[in-house]
Image 1 (cartoon, rainbow, N blue to C red):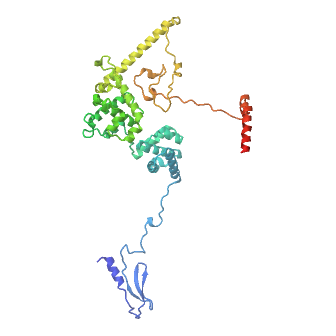
Image 2: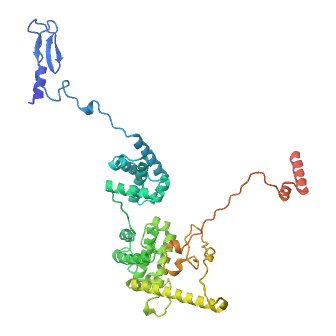
Image 3: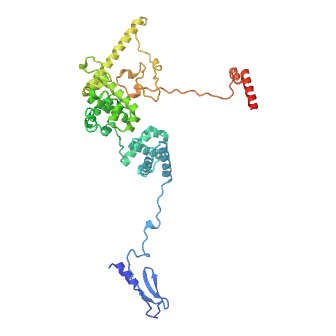
Length: 447
């Protein structure tokens, strides 16, 4: 039996009467930490309990711990609370999700208590909140740039970059970035093109499709098609061209929509970005045509987008040599055109000492793209002096220029303007209108 149970048993054996006076009014009395049984009539101590008890039985004479007496919960300081409000407001301005907002607040609280950011200016603490938002957005692949955060805070981008680097080093944060090559393998397996799922002519193993698709993505990266583009439409376009090129004679007749239905791709994804994916397909085919025309064994055979899929294997096999050859040939054609233009100008105007001048750059303002700003168009006609004229492959921002926004001047109306006679006459009823009005009034009164 344990010591606690023995003590309990001893306490339960309470005496029934007092041995001095014989009275039965014996009560239990607590004296500090020792229990006693005392007679109420004569006051004598009938029996005493044990002086030492278990730690759990002691209620008096015990040291009270600090956390149970005077400890107070540490409240966040005033600047930290203001920082939380500021960070949450910025998250709602940027329309971040609730999970991202809570993650930003948690990261800001961790960083705020670091020695590097604890005793700094309030401005730097505000910049720290913006850096926490930028860090979480980069980890979640959210389209928020450092310039956007700098604009919201009214701070310099260099200051934000310095604080961001210090935050990354202090908390040892690794910003994860996902490239288009990391998505290719999982994207290929989304298409159900196995031998048991579709016909033998249409079937293709995911590994062969992935290898051909990887080569096409590398070619697209070398020719600026990947730059500044969303990955999903480009992946869909490249997998479609890769599937066609692996058996072009039997698959050239299938459209992009038909291919997605055959492969049982997620309908929500490809229908939403169908138009953009078709643009990526046309850009890939255009690049393949430019390189296919440089194949030496074709001997001037026309290469068109409808038939270029038959040459994809040869083009990808020799793409480095074909790229350099196509660029050299294009530059040579430009030099020949420039020399011919200069010779023609000199022959037409011999009075200026046979001196030829290059085309004026003033016409650059007149040769602007007329495409709407929200549409991605085909090649816009670049000004003659534009640097893009000397390159065969151009970035999308140069190749598909957007229409420059023109600020419409606002009309200043004060109310003191003169009213023209024609405007005044428009307010006066003509004789015919007066007759119709009077006739209508009479009919209304008769009714």
